[in-house]
Length: 125
Image (cartoon, rainbow, N blue to C red; front, side, top):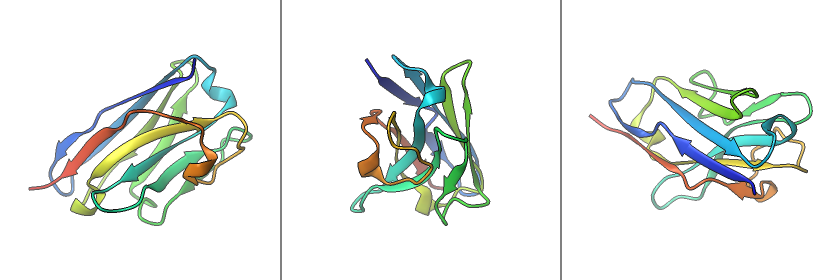
């Protein structure tokens, strides 16, 4: 049974950093496309950053480029999102998602079958 559990969210001041973790179980992460999405209040869910299951290539949304870094540890079966220079616009619930068929690395939520429960990130002074 595929399961994703996110952690690492919280309250951070503007300009601060957070590292989100997504622990995967029930499957081997190395063979799956996986990524991070977020949904802010009143907005649609958007793809933030994703990794291909084919060649580990990555995708970053324009809002994430230069500030966020996605990585995965296949030994720990965990994917991370390092977020730096956070702004209030980054406030959202962040979700981890994965799929065994979609090659990635595009972050289109309809292409990902399995989702975690989300972790809240709040950027505020």
